[in-house]
Image (tube, rainbow, N blue to C red; front, side, top):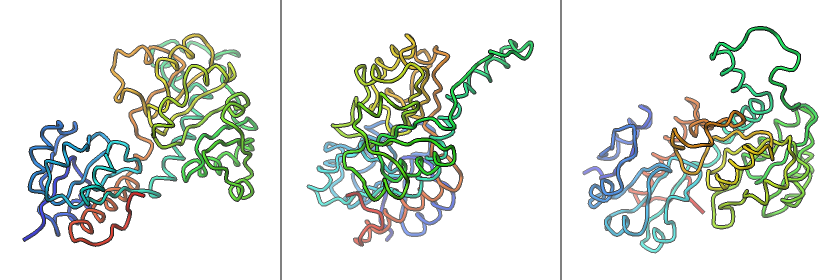
Length: 319
């Protein structure tokens, strides 16, 4: 008999075939996440759970799943999962690190360029029928070549962004919980305190995990340290930035612009005041959204799930 598993969202066909060859899989095959109580109701007899960041996996849900052996998340981050509660019940947790590094770094740099050169505003300008002639001072942006980039969090993705910055002859500062001398030498980046980085950087790109220490890391005080011409890029997690403080900084001109792949709350409601500002670019959490990357993420998650229900070591465990 195949082990029973629950999948909280549609998977790419290749990953679904690999999963169903081994497991009896029940799926919530809708666009929106399953309601919390729906997962609770369907997990009782399952030995595996394949989930996304949008699913809340807490102690109460785990108590409803006495046969659960493994939780496999299709993401690098796992702040939606109570890992300690899972460990206490002997449930292993897996994620999908590494595979999305290059796609996410590409996208972070795409957001940087788009915000610097006001691409979103330019698109709106044309679509609104306002483009009447060429103008010497029309939609003037910020130079990227030769500018100073501040990277907060120098993990895989932060390092990949630093490599891209070298092609633009940027000076790269970084701040992380642990100083990385070997990376400094390899990539030509400079360590700085967070405050010094914020004061000096023309562009600040966030690449930290969401933890108690990083929640609200960029708030009113930190935004106040940034230059009036500075641009903030967030492809990490929405709650790393205080949304109300960011709105105030953008609305007042305290900083020049922001480009966000992630928000708090997420998704950002259509009526949210941040979306009315011309100097903010918001996209729907798509930094890793390439065909190849998302397929590989799903396959990694499926392989974690299969290993877990078989009682084998997870190929990509958390921790």
